[in-house]
Image 1 (cartoon, rainbow, N blue to C red):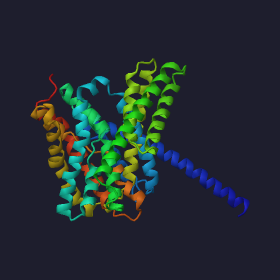
Image 2 (tube, rainbow, N blue to C red):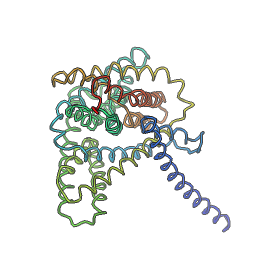
Image 3 (cartoon, rainbow, N blue to C red):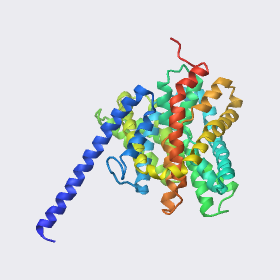
Image 4 (cartoon, rainbow, N blue to C red):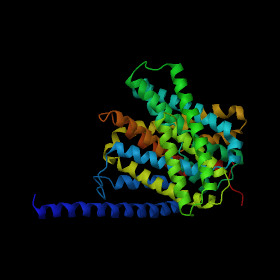
Length: 408
């Protein structure tokens, strides 16, 4: 290759890098502007980010090629860790005390019940093997912490404090159970009979107890560093961000729940008084929005809209079963011992918006088997869009219908 050719190749690589920087910045600006417009029409902002990603894909407006599921898993893990950390920072200990037990039951037993009801329905009516159907149910079961938090604040509802705490804490705690069920079912599908009930229970205890211990210890350590290190104001949020990601990565590598560890670490960090608290919280609010934009746009990029129609009828029916049967059955069963009113339980069953985590979980089988059936990913993607459209647009109406309208 001649010197001129080498220079041309170098210029091409540089130009490509600059184009990617421009494209990333433009997509971010467009996402923020589209989010502002979505507020005017009452559309769920996360749905807007997903649609933007779909439109920017390989065969559409911007022609961005992206089908790397390994990179998607890495980006998704980092983004979800940041979103969960921000949620934990903003969750006061008083809210945890108010609704921990019902939220914990709903985030574990409730998620399992939701997965089973939806999975059995898929197995019976779609002819999918039971374990595969349960895998789809497990991926679809968790509610989205970002979507629930944003929409509850924008719905203009006067919710009882205990109900609001329940929904906030549950959405932050239910991801670990879905991740556990997803990996457990994948193992059973790949190696039938490789783990029994006792082994599954032990694995569950290790993931949850280990995640809790690492999260509480890591959060305490971060809080002590913030209190005692003489950091510049600009460095304190960076310290917390690096520490939060380190806690997530360590927990995952040790075979425990990084999602639970991150959420609890953030709660402990936020609950410990220090002079940098306000700056850290503001920093993470911005980082969480950035993480949501990156995450949802990226997930949209993974989808080719023209490939979705064959899966549309089954996925829409599954979404209806999830919203109208699986989630309500789980919520009513789990909240019965905690004496929530019928109106409160009905509202909690409807505010079960799905978001990034189900799509994130549905890409994991692609890491193990690149030749996997695309039905899971496409169906979960459609289900999430249906949830954001139907439930996201009707949260305020549901609150007014059930008597939780804000008094003027």
